[in-house]
Image (cartoon, rainbow, N blue to C red; front, side):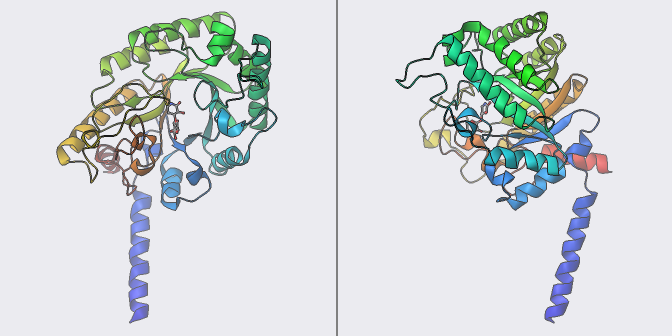
Amino acid sequence: MRIAILAASVALMTASCTAEKNEPTLKEYFSDNFLIGTALNVGHIKGFDQKADSVVRRHFNTIVAENCMKCEKIHPAEDRYFWDDADAFVDYGVRNNMTIIGHTLIWHSQLARWFPRDSAGNYVSADVLKQRMRDHITTIMTRYKGKIKGWDVVNEPILENGSYRKSPFYDILGEEFIPLAFQYAHEADPDAELYINDYAMNVPAKREAYVRIVNDLKSRGLRIDGIGMQGHMGMDYPDLDEFEASINAYAATGCNVMITEWDMSALPTVSRSANVGDSVAFSKLLNPYPDGLPTGVSDQWNARMDSITDMFIRHSDVITRVTAWGVDDGMSWKNNFPVRGRVEYPLLFDRDYNLKPFMANRLANTAK
Ligand code: XIL
């Protein structure tokens, strides 16, 4: 009896594995359009989340590190680098034959405190900061030469009104910190692709600033391959016509366009910014669906994500990569940003690792 049950359940498991094997994957679905990817956290990289691991290997052909290559993690003290997690991330990508993206070299957030300061806590001189930037960029890029395809060299340097963010880099070096970072990155690995990356890339004043900056880099003969539109979205932003106008404007610079951190909040919008330092206090009103998304909201979310996917496909002549900022809803940073402790639903896979309906339908239609 026991053997019969065992045999029956093995047969069932085999059947469901075969069924899964026959279903198309995201990377097959988008194979004529762009690379399709996800951010990985340390749990994924180290294999603590087996279900996510099989989703990642099955569906995605490009990965980016959610946190482990950021300055505070990888370079916590001037004379100390911490490589374990970043090495494991790169090994994971190499093992699985994925396009590996480095995130991020020069960024005001998650910047190690020591980086722009001297031992008394004051800002260092321009020369010292340049040297530190050069060392940081060169050491990291050299370690992963030939394995990492491209780097977010500078992240989030511009505000929505098109002005420069008052970061330590800007305060000490002025606008030059951007061209310097690109120069150092190209010197460190002449074969690596180099990107600039930001959120709210649909906003017209920001768009104009990026077009100006990218054209300026190019006119100086500096390498820049891609403009990353992070793509942190909500149900009422961004305006999709503006987003599309930005895709066109960025493509007109000659750069590739990449959707680098795609997610879409299903919850009430409290801020359109993705600046990780911002936060809004929790309230129950801001966390309306702790036990699951009501059908009406889920339908709206899926319909909007479907139109956005159409927009990406429409521009797949210039969009070379679309990367979701995480695998499943349960691990999304949006559960804690900008309000800590909300239950969010922003990613392509739900908490049970099922593909969301709008995308599952697309895949099912190709299978017919
Ligand atoms: C986020 C991570 O997802 C969180 O885990 C971390 O606590 C904060 O940073 N823009 C970026 C990403 O470029 O690096 C940020 O990632 C989200 C906004």
